[in-house]
Image 1: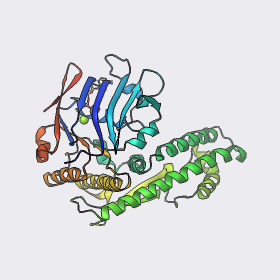
Image 2: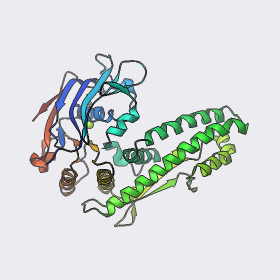
Image 3: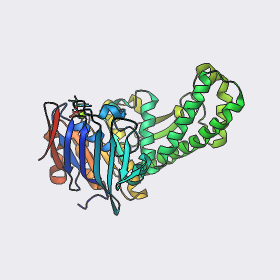
Length: 370
Ligand SMILES: Nc1ncnc2c1ncn2[C@@H]1O[C@H](COP(=O)(O)OP(=O)(O)O)[C@@H](O)[C@H]1O
Ligand SMILES: [Mg+2]
């Protein structure tokens, strides 16, 4: 198998949660990580997720990631193969402020990480994605949208910052329309970009699912607005919706319309059943189906599938689906980092994956290449 064109060739964790110093070299194959509960497996995946924009796969605050025993900040670094280029990437937190990013030893933005690398994950809390609140579904969709359009991260940040400002005015009971127009214009502009990126992502996912020969069930997805109203899509529609919504928003003390109220609906196509009504295993299979479609579409668009972080991925997948997942990851040529409690979960991978055994002693994780 040729080495994937988007992959971490090496990874170093320093003072990152349970990892005091962990240094890993990869060989291009997917990485199967096993060990007991609490050994430090998910922490490795979380460290990799910090090499992409945002708060990583646990949504943690930067200071939570500091190894509590030393409390001296943390650092994650690696060598990233990105298409035909190789970059040194590093992100760290020194105890104050926000996390810093270095690409090839130069200070860079988090968004810049998103342009050279694409990281997509599935974690156990997402097992309840289809039955819980819209937040998780939006984040899941936004992660995929960001993999296609790295600028999605910037649009989201701009939108959220402007919305915080507007919400402050609403809470303070500001009524003068002239105070709102600038901030609403900003929200409308960024919001339209967010909406467009999400729709494009859904289109690409739909096409990638349609063309695929896969063991995973296709999910038919739609973007809807939380309140059952039509999703305001363009700059103008959004600006108008914000202005119209002001009286209601003043009562609520927050913004009730816009892309932050969008929800992702999915239907198990072949059965015509809403994802939230499917069995736990089916719900998981739909998520896997979407991220694999994401990978195929990205391979065509960007030139490589994303780096996958699949935490406890074998849970809820029966043996056939698990084997199918491994086959599809290998066929895609994606660097997937997968965790599970024991090596038996990865047996079907044979020598198609490298294996890491993670153990914990006295609060320190160690990793052995098996
Ligand atoms: N900030 C931290 N400092 C030190 N240890 C931490 C920190 N955060 C979590 N841990 C430890 O990491 C371990 C959990 O690691 P995790 O990777 O989630 O385990 P698993 O192997 O089950 O996925 C726990 O033992 C926890 O106490
Ligand atoms: Mg875990």
